Image (cartoon, rainbow, N blue to C red; front, side):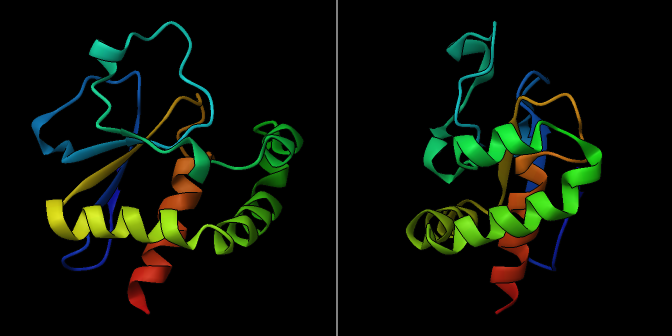
Length: 126
């Protein structure tokens, strides 16, 4: 998935999908390493587990679609306390031109990488 502002390219991709040349810097944004996936196949450039939602928030959400909007609000509040990590991702995007946020969840539309991307785009507009 590739949405964004002109000049800002932050992609979101399932870590189990094949890497491609257009991925730029591949950043795993899950707290836990994906099950059954070796590091060489994943081709993760940076694992930023600290930017992932807290364990409590992750468990509360449980990929329940009815909790998606509330999950994003709570996660965005957590991200406000992780300014250094958020800025590090934005800096990687500025330097590399493209970053791809990698996630392991099965839901392609409602996961922490999609929420993080939305948050980053809002921050990039400021």
